[in-house]
Length: 67
Image 1: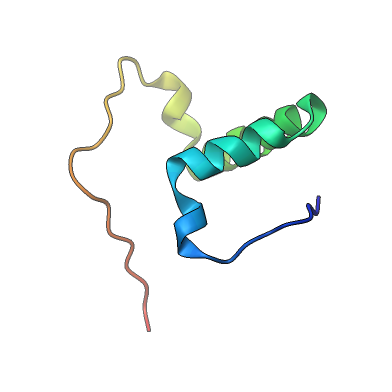
Image 2: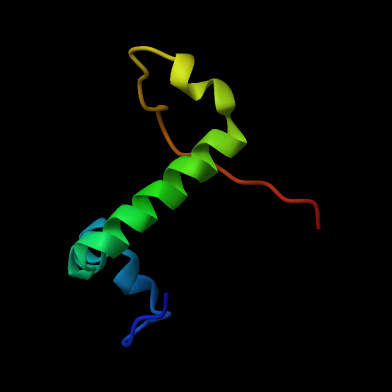
């Protein structure tokens, strides 16, 4: 899936900009993205479907990588 007008500017990464991008996709592509995200989440944490009343984490999340 390639889309014209891809930007690498950090200012385009606001939640509003991401929502506009997602809404600009045709319905079929939105559903495809939804399935890809769902499969990614389930691959990373298969037990997530067993969780009930999940709450968002507080604060920021920091990703660390071995340099």
